[in-house]
Length: 401
Image 1: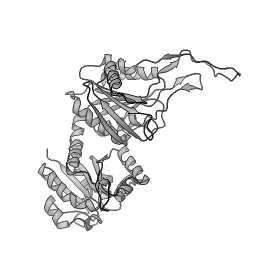
Image 2: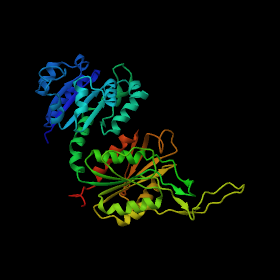
Image 3: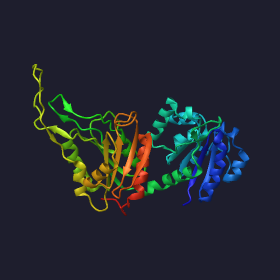
Image 4: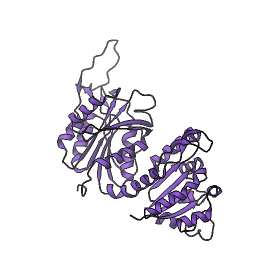
């Protein structure tokens, strides 16, 4: 599968590795065009790069040879890969700056965009860079996470450019995923439900909806048609997604059950309240100096209900927020509910869970296998989840009409 790859190289000491990456990508049959920043050329020999790519190396946006080509470069490529991506360049991308050729191309590109950061550990973990990385992943930019190993400072730490094999694999995923997900109809539930006590008060939970929204964004970026059924959140609707707002568990159940038959895959990421009031008060209950007892009844198990409606070629993914991850109990839960995959997280761990931007998820399958995906921003985890779905789900030959 020959594709046109635009390889951006920035001012990192790992810039020399772009030559090895170019050689491997050309071995895979790809046509590689290299664009380097001014600082990258301090580490990258121009003539060698041109020999490796078979093309001129572009750097200066005002070079007569490139001045009329810079928009064409972005329009014609199948993927834009920035490897290595320095801290400075990640910040430029997140802020939408365009003061050189490569940053301009990043704004003009409509193809998949990937970044492979390379920098010192303290820089990679700095709050400013963390925020910029989150901004980019939320926009659909695919981050190829750096590795832990020897750094330019001589220390060991996180920030070493990902291996060539990891970069090749990520690029391959981005080049093929739009084809696999194109036309696939995805249903995602997200956020909490609010169960009314009276017209003012409600029973709810601390779900922010961030994981479900990240999944909806990731599916849409892979070419899927996405329907997002969302409980009350403070999040902005993802671009290109059909969003339906609900409040209570019963409203969520009705909306999901109505939409499910027309979709190929469903992610039940919503944190559905387990209980609701048997008889909500029609008017606001005022303080009268007495105690107040609420009578609760269970809400329906929406995930289990969907499994009974599921066609053989549909794929159903459940979520479990637990205070403790017990593999046997989680596996029993997965099989009892009839889902095809269960994604569990431990909400008792600090720094992850409902309100956090990060999460740590363990995936379980009905055959008993499991995979800990590690702690990542939820936007990164969303793509990791979709990568695992691609491994175990046999995509339908065509989407539902």
